[in-house]
Amino acid sequence: MIVLNLKEILENVESYENRFVLSPKEIKLPPEVGNIEEPVKVHLRVTKEREGYKVKIKMKGAVDLECSRCLEVFRKIFYQEIEKHVEPYPKEDNLTLLPEDLDVSFMEEPDVVYLEDLVREEILLSIPMKPLCKPNCSGFYELSKSSAEDTSIDPRFAILKNLLTG
Image 1 (cartoon, one colour):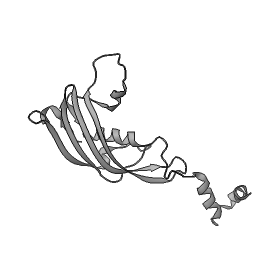
Image 2 (tube, rainbow, N blue to C red):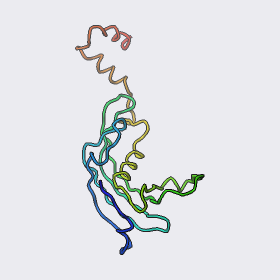
Image 3 (cartoon, rainbow, N blue to C red):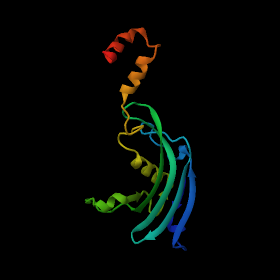
């Protein structure tokens, strides 16, 4: 796990910049969302701001997703450039969420950021709610059409072939 103590890192410098390669094991996507098979390349730049830190992340990688129409697994390549604000959790009990708050991540510990958490969060946000292998995926229709042409169909399902052609 890559732990960045931003207070220490930015004590004597104005900004911090580094490149990382995160393994799929480090990112740990939930299995029901998708699967990462190859390392993700990350370029990170952090600068201090009044109430936290400005973080710029450039990341490149691929995630294997299941098409929501045909259920085939496909690979989605992502290249993202994100700029967000990282700050400690607010101390107030009642908060109002403003549009600019959507680009904020909160630190579990003061001045400490876990790079894997930031990257995982951005990957999860980039995955569509209904991923499609291709924009014009026709779903099960294509699969049923190709299996109807297949001569190795289980004889118990042969009557279903008439439904497709009839």
